[in-house]
Picture 1 (cartoon, rainbow, N blue to C red):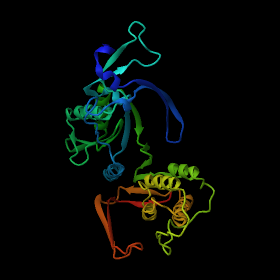
Picture 2: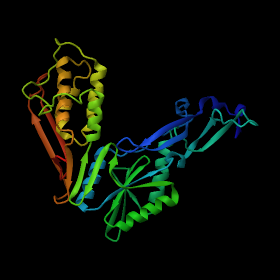
Picture 3: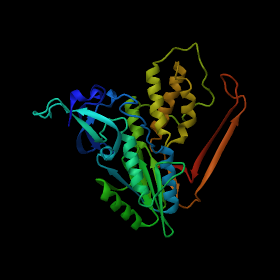
Picture 4: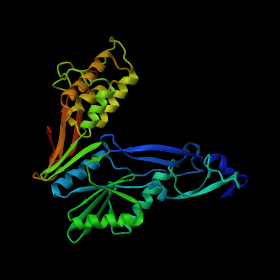
Length: 358
């Protein structure tokens, strides 16, 4: 504890506040109540209280490729999370925080704390945690992915162990079950961990692991956004877009609430992680977010009505098909109705992928 008057940085650094949050399972059931002290990071000043804050985070595409490879290799994916992960990170900067309200030391009410390890809320907390975890894994025989910095790989006698990091959530799998057990023990020797068993829910993706492959779906999220925008009881549509009526600028039509329009687009964007069938229609609607008109809103509503009729469509990664990256590309010459420009697009997907009703 340090004298407040002797540190000019105190008025630039963080206070603490209590934060309470319920941790819920994928279906909304409360697992446990959480409460922790959180630093008020918005009072920090760049260059004084923190410098580098960047921490790699796994992309949703990386998670899909991970699951596709697991299906192809025939191994089970497991999940763990770290309890109070950010508090393991060692910070490099000199940072002080006030004593939290209600917990002041009566003998030293004007003293402040010097932070040695990261607190939740600090700008550098994610970076400090990632550096701590990465250093620990690298020192125990793991190699970091050259492209994906959140992927760690360990090879042992012809077997492979894959670990994917998303902040404090960790998914892992191996061609040898014993390697998974060793990894769990390795993590628990250093950190307080919660083993969650086989992966069933991650970053909003519902995962079903079966003998012949892996299903990925977001039907829970579909029902949530339908309820959010009051489309739970509407008439369904058979397709996500009307190809006979391409969207145009439509300057003579009435304006619509741009905030509502953007909210609907944003909600649908996250759904494309497992629903590529709405990608084309959604991207067409997303071009008109600056000044949306009634025709554009009707097109977005059609996507919702399509989801109402097909809420459970999912991706299927089969272990029978060879694992390979398949590239798709298409060109539309002078097909843009607004400016008659040519459009070229492409995508890479790990094969096998197929839409399937469940």
